[in-house]
Image (tube, rainbow over all chains, first blue to last red; front, side, top):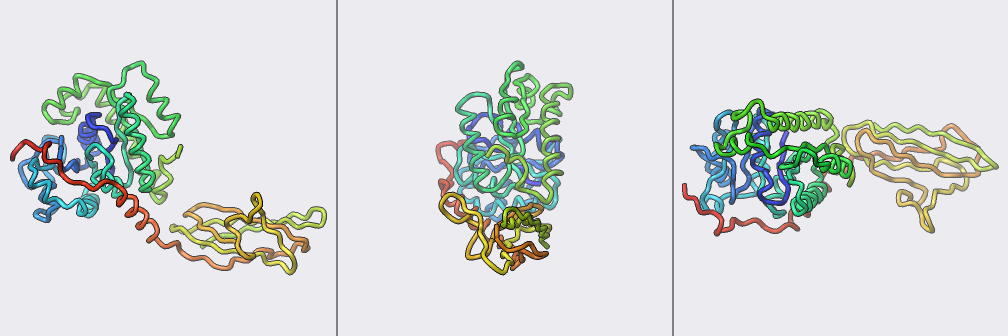
Length: 235
Length: 122
């Protein structure tokens, strides 16, 4: 199952969500933010090499701590050589090997977001409760619907404990919403580029990422054979 | 296959015919049905026009896997056992979806790496 993590706005926690979800689903995190990547960097070939035809997708996947990552290079030359059109095939190959492929995307709504959204089985929207982020997430949702990719869940980051925003989002859009509080555990994990499970197994944030993973798995079970009926309520 | 269940209701000299068509296949199917009556038939009208599924005495629509659609018409003819006829069932071509995806992607801004953002060298 290919899960594309997106949301339009930058800085809302897409990469953190990608890494943690890949860890909780025991899948592979793919850094498809080809120019401004945030996921930890490996030592071997990266997605630039794969998309330029210099490496096979499986050869570029490596364990970074407790999570498998297909990381992204950091050079302009690498980004320029990467063929975005090769991404669907790359994700498809990874999907055959790993049960869950979790794809991080850049901010915005350009083709480098559209291609991984179109290639995915489901989309996970990431946003914060702030208005600009919510508006961007809704635009991304429209794009996903235009591309016939259902939205499986919303990850609402940095939400206060008393906020009614998660319930409001669920009611309004009919999409399961997981609230992930701002916490020291997340910050500590981010510092080291590790998933929260590796940093603090007792944290509330980890419980929420586990819940998010369960939502995706339930969606996967329901979605078998009825791909377009999942999570599209409220269109 | 598709499953068709037809029922009739006779009131004040008019027979109301309804059919439920279920797509039991795993792919979308385009289904054509016809009124099988020897006499006048009146298809439903919305506003001043004909319902979009109806052409000249035939009804056509695409039904997704596992879904059921209903069609119906009225006629002065007495009820019989077979007042609807399944004309054809064809698999909806997947090409339509692919083209649509390509169209949506083509409308998006083209991607190119912004040179001012990438600073870290390998």
